Length: 222
Image (cartoon, rainbow, N blue to C red; front, side, top):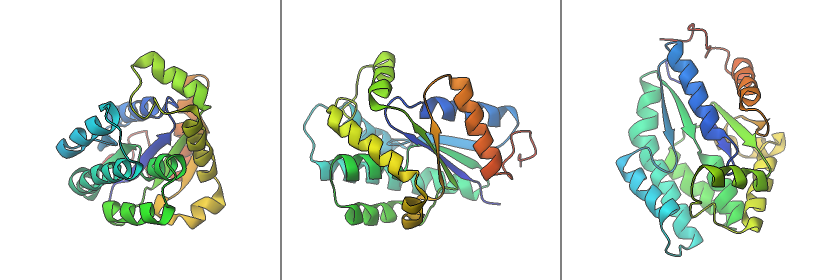
């Protein structure tokens, strides 16, 4: 039986990586087979691309940035995500299609249809079973991110860019947008502000409601 693909999305500092780690720990504790990856990265090729995208200082054209994110995604899907799903493991993914739509289409202003076509090449028809979209005001998220580490190339972008990204993520939670973008699968928005335990409780409620076959009490283990 094919595993489930669960994606965590959100702006800088929204808490997606924290909630992914928490869910992974619960799956491990209940014996549910799974793997987790981050974008960009997750493969030798992807990790090298990650360094270019996030930790390089050289100027980069918006189309170059988008192409590198999508190249990393293509390698991750082909060599890590799809094989894991096909062997029956669930996959938790830190960023996927929505990040490219938010950052490169809405943030950088690239044409949507061009980016969607390139993404289709990278994903080869793979659609998330559920995307958990953590929402947070950009100013608060960047403050959180700055407290944990030095700002990367994306985080150093101007405030207007991050406001555009946040507005895009808010739009993605709307049913009409999701109906027009079936390649992104079902998306549910979860407020990322406040206590991390409360956010985790809502993540688990959404998982229980939307993926009832993937339980956290051991019944979903294979």
